[in-house]
Image (cartoon, rainbow, N blue to C red):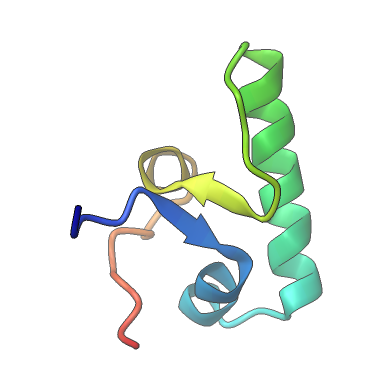
Length: 64
């Protein structure tokens, strides 16, 4: 499985140019929204598809 399905806080911080604390805050908020819709979530990770849906301009991949 080579296609990434989750982003971590580190990847989000890098993509958006923000601190790790802010990245974790964004992850928590997105995971709370997903939980409210009845989805299972993983702490510290958010599905790539949901992140791209919620965050304008998030289609650019992180280059490691």
